[in-house]
Image (cartoon, rainbow, N blue to C red; front, side, top):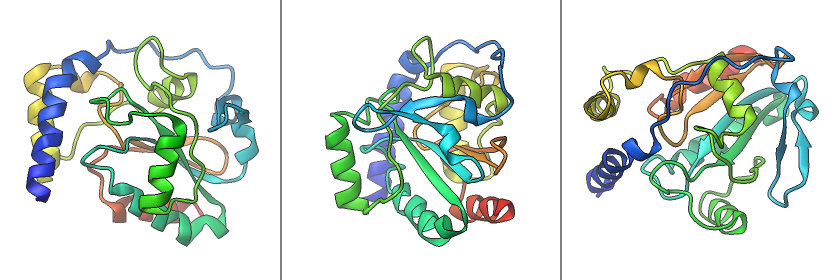
Length: 213
């Protein structure tokens, strides 16, 4: 069953990569060198200043509810449970750009995530992460931590690299986010420390979080 689910995910990626692919963006001209310059919308469309998270270690994630990687919500919640008291936050940004795998309203998405995965970390309004409609936050994040490639020693990583390269031989030269559950790790001073692709192992992410706490 897991194999069938992954193959369905892979087929959707292959068909939709061309539609989702965007040209590489020029580096963003920054007015600040940290994440605290940005505001986002929460689930009821109230403005949230990321300056409210000063002094925290942050993991910023673009997510989807109907993706092969959706079970990573469990891993994210486990991280949040273990380290929230030490100053760790997960900031969840649903995104429907990849295979339209985050359909529905915020209430639909949030209801699914709280009901199925019992998430308690902040979940923001749905947004775009690539292209002309990309949120300023994600344009900045990509400029700070461009795509570094999939781990091709990993079976799924190797498959994704082969699949995307078949669509665009230079796909890895773009800083764009490639798929759901890409993660950016931010230190207590608001600087981007690491970018993790969706295939990154939970233990690797946890070790990087612990090193910053």
